[in-house]
Image (cartoon, rainbow, N blue to C red; front, side):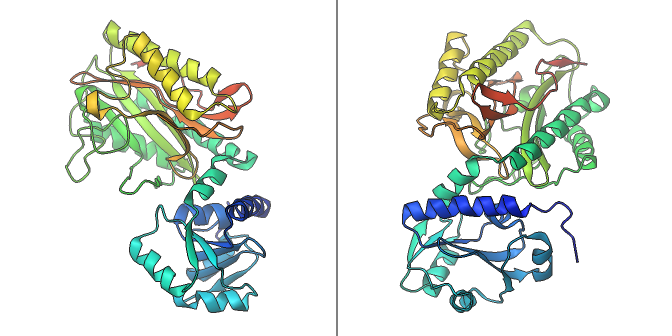
Length: 399
């Protein structure tokens, strides 16, 4: 059986394993047990229900409950065995020639408490260490292979945005328009699932909202929320009809072979008021400022402060990235397999940028009762600053 026509190359997986081994060794951890779907995919190439054991000394062991044959087809991991219960873990490790670790790393940022307690019992006597920061730091630096996939995802983002001219009509509801745009994305191979690491966060394609509806705040860690179709969703498109002369926000994520592109463009049926056009232009200026300043070695928090100061100098400080207590304290975020990866261009963040990091930069202005303007593009960090992937015009598209 060969279901894995787009499998992650073996050399790619081996390089990732080498990087996390180095991080574990530096932290004094004997081994990692990888359980979360995104991390499993990153380090093994499969999301089948598995335990991936990575010792500092020795080769990884992928122990698969469901589906074993599919995991063998999808993953280039050399050693793959079936497992029926986590209680088998110590015996399987011994059979693999690996001693049960004294210091075991787990993804404690995402692992449910009951499972944590279960593994603590299974590995009785072992010290459980949180290795989620190490995993996220390793994943923050993208390989050429990953950068290529994200660049392809951004090309699809451009094509999705280009379809708005075919679908955006006066009187169409936000939710109906969203369905048409999402159908176009699926035709290009959008995987449908957008993964986020933050507990309680979820997203379906992204946000497509217009006028006052787009400026409604929500629980989501995002500058935009949306009126939505129900309190059960509390974000995104609503049943509101789209009107002329109001900004239409298309903030969609394209998910391509596991990798994401985050992409925002503003559209309008007919001209927008001059104050909104000027506000959008100001956000393009901030995007340019950050792109040139975001070089290797620059702390992420410094870029956030530069953007905040620039918005205030332009007279938009009260609307930048939200209003009042609803304001979001970031202007960009890492992106890859998940939407919320390192680094965060956020207040107080000291992580320094490195070449190969991927950043979604999203300076936006929220005007309650009016709408949202601004931009978002996915970039790679280079020695000269941020290199933008998306090519669709950053200007407001008037239809």
